[in-house]
Length: 365
Image: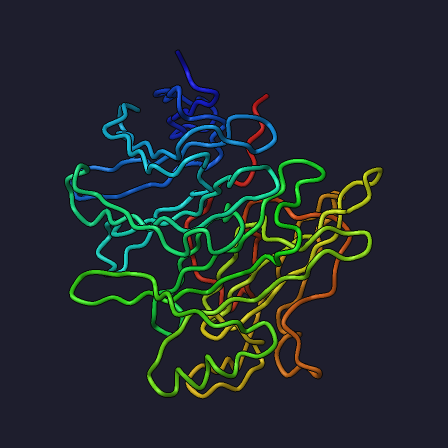
């Protein structure tokens, strides 16, 4: 018996002559869309996959499971049953968090969705896996923000924010046209600091609502109290379902986190919807222009390329969010919905670091 999904490994050392290496599948993978989490350990690397929905409407009739796979052979070395029923995992596409920057993965996090009775009632949270040990069988996980909000299915992004590690993610799902669970509950985007002591890290669970103001987070930071933050997105509006996070956040190394968000159309005969981009201070969730002592951003450069479902790409200058009157945290809405992957930020040539490339599109002829 095979699963509904398979993952494949190819050797693309020679892009014109790729070599098939292995295929991994399992009867409990479902329609997995987590993609891989690459876990680098001393002397050995592993891949992590999460089980997905069991039908095309984003439903699940099974427990959420993790599959730890040998990167060289494609064989499962451990299957972790979380015991979370009627659930599936969100996107990975990450190398996890190397908090001590020694070249090895220490933690890896992902969101999940859990059906609570009906398709109109989906809840979620964050699974935080401790993979510090070289022994796969000693890896463990904890659940944070359990059922505190709707499904969390975008990638959990990590970023060094004012010299402290943070995690960023958003809530929301959209698998079919009228997919609008918990329609009276507003979705959120989050910035969660990590507390790391004696070689161990854990997310800070004291989280403030900064939808209207980030002043309290700033004041607490001045007093040595580090808190997480969240912004509530727009509710249902005339012609649109509620705003949600269905696109991976984009971090940039100027202490800024970027969240594209979308509102699908509420017109049964229509299509698409509208989207905007939040440009936020990574530590406070406030506007880039906020003058929080110790967390002030004096300069912001670069251009964001925002891909939309109409086939167009919007070029957004980030500098407009500095010294802007009135202060704003997001762009206006654009026609179209955003894809699931993070967006591209182009930095000026004078500040562009030389980085390794990544394949954006591969067409096989």
